[in-house]
Image 1 (cartoon, rainbow, N blue to C red):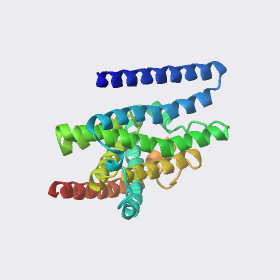
Image 2: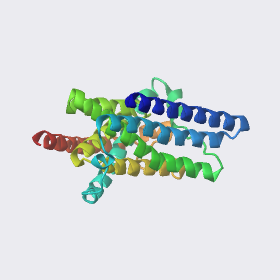
Image 3: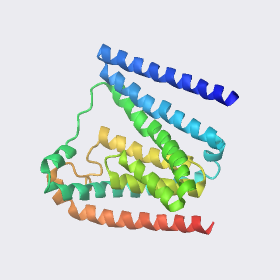
Length: 266
């Protein structure tokens, strides 16, 4: 009886939350304030939804927050995480170049569109709010959902390799740069398994997204010697992108091999 009452209570609270969110969304759309509407929806997507998913899964499996999020031993991972961030960003940029280079002859119009930077709104508050959500809130939410819930569930059911691989694939599907996002997710998963705390992959994710927000908001061509912003760049920057692609990929694969071997030994 008590379990039924608890489920009924959660259902009512969940239904009321959904109704409230929909009401706010409709009200903001009716007033024509689309920027505020976008910010509110981003906040909901990266706060309310992850909270529902994680709280339900953690409660169901008896997982305490202190078991998966703690500070002990995190400080010694700051420099490695910074190095991994540089490698992952370098790989992401160069693999994106390779993907666009391959598509340039097949669909130049689509490639031109992908390279065209969308203008930012003039309202500073919107840029600051959306930047904060993408740089800080999104990494926390995504690490809890994809590493704390999905990867944990899949590794328990399918084993280490399949759990990390499938959860990383699910993560990459929600991002434009699929190959870059997949390798990022693998590294984040291994950092979590290696350290036992979500704080380390969260820091990796925050470092990565902060640089991405800086690139998009302030300096789209950073780093200029590597970044492609036009179809001409796809051909003129072949050498640096190929070099960075090989070096970053080999370095990341060596890191993955080291962590996997260490996990299997333990």
